[in-house]
Each structure stands twice: as structure tokens, then as C-alpha cells.
Length: 514
Image 1: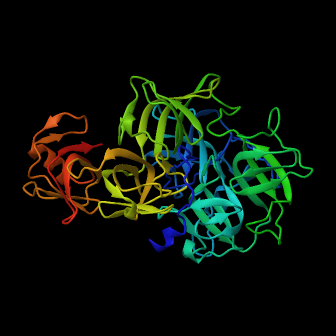
Image 2: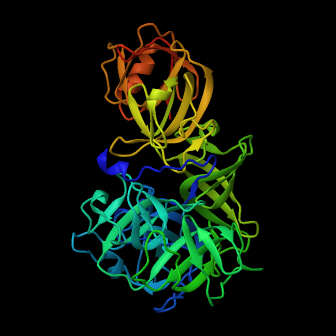
Image 3: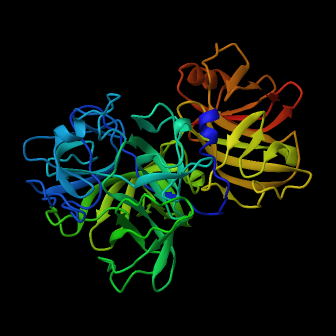
């Protein structure tokens, strides 16, 4: 975990969570970020819309080249009429495919938006890309280490972050120039999808929400921006606290982590989420899909109302949930919403909501000795790392826990197995006889074997009498183990008893997780 320690965040703000997206691409081309035909401020050729009518929008992270593969199952073809942009400036597929010194394509890992033509199918899993646009979030010098900061913005990288011309995040030092793509949170943190080390940068850039504002300056994350003579663009009645902005600046050799940014050349207000392009097939609605981090929740009572990747999403009675239920919708979780975007209201009505992070959940007695303040929390002998985006309902991550309490930790696991907390809260008096553990099964056991391992924790099902399927219907023990033996599943045990000496959970009720 050495490298990841650099990305641990030492501030915990309840309820805050980032905005961003994640698409998965794996064959021709791909990428899009922002409104079709975006701005070209800062130099370069102005972006022009692709040739064709747009019938669907998909947002996420570019992973490979070929056909555009979004979230693993959305395949969009590209052709001679497909337009490509990078940070709002016209580019080409070949430019995005170009590799750096280590062979990593320029566009791999960038946050993208893909507009899809009228041949988009009903579920937006196929069609022709009219426009592919990629955007970066932060460009500039590293200003701090442990936690990593770039231009005063805290950066969280996981094993899923693409590293380009960079062997490891741990090798970065203050003053190194980097370009970061990722999910930008309301408080300035970036959950990085790509970090590239650069030898030089002609333009510095930072994206985020204005945290405070006065007549001559404003803040984004930990960065103070001196407005100078620059007039903000596209800000309606004016630049104000709470607005999302993109700031560009000239390089400043004297800039450091303690400095204000004084070389600003452009300030642009940006609208997060999806926007209907001018060449839309409908004046009322578009097929739409967005994947990213849940940043706010207005209602969890159907119809649910929440924001993911900056996009407001509502559900209906017929919305299908995959990988979890409505109750699993928490701040900081990565989710995908697929449905219809209302062009007038800007609301995406979801037909399906899919939880994308491998979700984990723990409920177990925790003492103050199990918490490294502002860094991590130990549960069942496992280290769960906290970030600035972790919701800390009772201040336990900050060191307020006294004695031993039953504590619930929700979060996710990255592809290397590192665990991250999205929410920590008190659940009452400590009780080893009523613990909970949810996560992916480590290996497929034989049907006759009563032992399971989940996240490295042994579960002894010998004394368990209740087994349920993914719809909470009671099933037989044999059916439960047949499903587990098939592999690729997650399970949840509730009301189990935990022996802290042996590290085994016994008894309890077992349920298959979708």
C-alpha cells in the first residue's frame, strides 16, 4: 500500500463527494468530454460538431482504442465524419492514439463524452460516434506530497489510475509537471483516472467549484486564484460561490503550494453533467448514459433523486438496480445511470442504475486503536483507507471515537484489492455477536465446504440456517453454494458472530449480492 498512502487525504468532510465519469473503451477510438463543439479558448483550432444528428450521449473514461467501448458493453463505431476534440480544441483520432515515451496512448484514461448518432440502439450499447471529446481536469506542478496535490487540488490515485510516462505516483516530487484526468469533486479533490508526467506545459489548468469569492480572488480547493483583469465567461449573472469553473493560466516559475495563482489567462464557468448538443435528434429527449461518483442525494425514497457525475438523476417505480439496491446508494459510490435525458429540465430519468465499484460493507466493534486519525480504519483485520471524500458521520475518522463502538463502514475495492471508505458511522454499542460483512468471494469453494473467504476473512456457514438469493428470496444451502461455486459473486452475512482471536465469522444469515 506504500504508493497509495501518498493519496490518503487528511481532511474528512461529511457528505461531500466528487463529480465525474467513467466509460470503458476497448477497440477504435473514443473519447468525448463536454458539450459537443466545445470552447476553444486558450489557443488551437475551434472545435466543430461532427457530421450527423445526435441521438444519444455517453460519458466516462477512455481505456483503449478500436471501436469505442463504453462501460465494457457499449460499442460505438467511428469513421471519417467523426469529430474529435481535446479540451475543447479540434484534434484527431491519430493524435489521441499517439503514444508517449512509455507507449501509453495520449487519450487512454482521459474523461470523455461520446455523442452517438441516430443509429444508436434503444439501450445505447451500439451506434456511430458523431463526436468524441476528451478533457483533462488539472494541468500544472505538483504542489504537495502525502497527500498528493497538483495546483492545490488533492489527487487520489488507485491501482485503476492510468500512469503515463510515470513509473509510480510515489516517484513524484514537488515541482514536477503533470496532467491529470479524473472525477472532480465539489471540494476540489480529483479521483484520478489518468496521471501523465510532462517535461513542459504551455498552459496550466484547474477545474473545480468556487469555494469562496471576493472582489479580486476566489478559491478552488486549496488554491487561491487571483482574477486580475480577466473577465469570467459564461457565468450568467457573474462568478459566484458554488459555480463550477475552469481556470487557465500561464506557467509561473515562482509558483509553489503556498502561492496564489496570479498568471490567469481565462476563467470559464462550466455546467456539469450532460447537455443536449445543437445537432440533437430531439428537442425534448435523448438516450443517455452517465457513469461517475454520486455527489449528492436529495431523496432515497422512490422516486430517488440524486446526482452522479454532475448529472441529476431520478428513478421511477420501474427502474432496475444492478449490483445493489436503492439502499446501497451512498455518497462517493461509483454508479452508472442509463435512461432518457430531458433536454429542457436537464434531468436524466433512469431505466437502470448499476453500481460500478465492487462494494464492501462492514459492521463490527471498533476501538480508537483501530483508527489512524485522518488516514485509515481497521475492521476485521482489514485496512480501509479514507479520503477527503469519505463521509464521516460521527467524526470517528478524525479521532473522536472514545472506547469501543459498533461501527459501520461502507466503501469500495479497487482492482488491486485496496479498500476505500465512502461512509463511516456509529451503529450503537459494540456487539461481536451481530456483525456484518459484504464483499466479493475470494475463491469458489466446493459445495460441501462450509467455509467461504470474503476479502480474506473466513466465514463459517455451519451454523447458518437462512440463505437468500439476489432478490432476498429464501433458497436452500445447496442452491446458495451452487451460485457461489459458479464464481464472480459477492455475498453478505448479517448477524454473524465474530471471533477476534481466530478471525472467523460464524453463523448469521447469508445473501447473494447482485
